[in-house]
Length: 114
Length: 109
Image 1 (cartoon, each protein chain N blue to C red):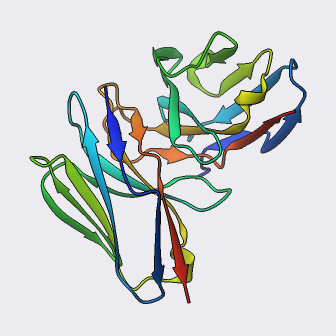
Image 2 (image 1 turned 45 degrees about the vertical axis):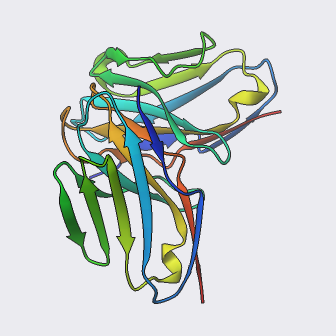
C-alpha cells in the first residue's frame, strides 16, 4: 500500500511567485491534514479536511494560502504570492477515521522562497 | 488553547537510557502521542497514550499521567540511528495533532 505522497519534494521560488503543493493521501483515508515546519520550530497545524470539506482551517496563516481537496482525494496547497517567511517544510498527513491512533505523514515538500 | 513543553535538546551515549519529558495544557484531553523525525524525513508515529500508565513497544516506552498533565518517552539501549527529533503531540477536538517544539536527541558513540 502506498503511503502519503507529496509533490514537489523541493521547490525554490522567488518572492511574489506562486507555488502549488500536492498531496495524495493513503487510499481510503478521509482525513487529510496539512502541517508546516519552519526551521527549528514546531510542526504547526495548518488545516484539516474530512473528505472534500474543510473541517478546521484555524492554522492557516493568512489569505495567501489556499487549500483544496476537490473530490475528496488528493489535496493542493497554493501559496500566492509567496513571501520569505513561507519557507519551510510542508507536511501532508492522512488518517482513516477521525479517532484512529495513527496519522501517517508524507515526506514533506521543502519550500524555499528567495 | 493547547500548548506543550519539552526540552529542546538531549545528548546521550550509545547503550544508555534517555527520558524525554513533555508537559501539556489542553482545553480537553484526547491522548498524547509521540513522533520521531529524522532530518529531512517524515514524522513517524511511535506511540499513543490515552490512559495513565506505561506503554512499551520494544526499546521505546511512553508514559502518561493525566492528573499531572505530563508524559515521557523512554528510549532504552540507545543506538546511533535514534538520533532524531522527538515530538510529543496532543489531539485537538477535531482530531488534528498539536505538536510540541520537539526535542533533538543526539546519540554519541
